[in-house]
Length: 333
Ligand code: AMP
Image (cartoon, rainbow, N blue to C red):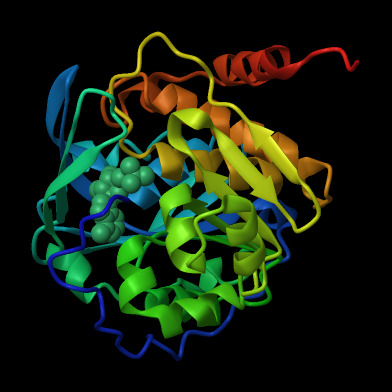
């Protein structure tokens, strides 16, 4: 997300539908499943390299499509009645269960962003929350034992509401943005106390911690609750820490970067998707998860919107993941 705030806040929390019986699943395949909540959108994007209008986007969309290269994903979100069956097909033929994606009367969330020449600067031209304004994430009973959870960038109270509906998740990762850091710090603190990993960009890390130095910022943020902090730095790569030391990965040097929209959410999809696919969690997996995230993000930016992710093949993912090893390997002195 960038500096612009949503036109209206996503602050209407309604009582979550109750009465659904928890259905305890004994399905082994559930053990590696991710529940992802966040925006599903119609985006309009302009970069110096082209333009796309009213294309499917949204944080939960990018996340789910990236994560589904690694494991099963259950998407929870909302679209309006204008969201076509054809657009719904971006989720089809993939390991994505969309029974938690509500379609309600009204229009789908719409966002327009424009980028300047170096692609690091983005201006949000508009954000129309539409049906997202009354979004009340209801986790279907069949999804309530999801062991991995990704809380996309929505009101922290809604993130908490999702967490409350999940039975004993094993690993919770969250994203947030400047708007919530500034506007709802107390709610955000409650989320941070309950997540395993926080994935944010460098400006957000500085803002959340009140500390310009990223190493000190990381220490301050880890004291708020998460045991893992992943700081995304766009074309400069990623910095990760669990408190003791850092792991840093560069971004893949690419000749063709056309549209950075969704890169952060795509990174998160690769990161959490890889971890979930491994079954057991251990420290050694986190650096590889960063590379999985960087790999997915590097594809996403090569074309507009979801285009590159939608044409991507699994063997290309493996090949680029391995290229990262060559990119960073050197002999010690
Ligand atoms: P990113 O480039 O990682 O910031 O993600 C961009 C995606 O986030 C776009 O597909 C937008 O539809 C979506 N988005 C933009 N603003 C918001 C917002 N305020 N809340 C939720 N999703 C948003």
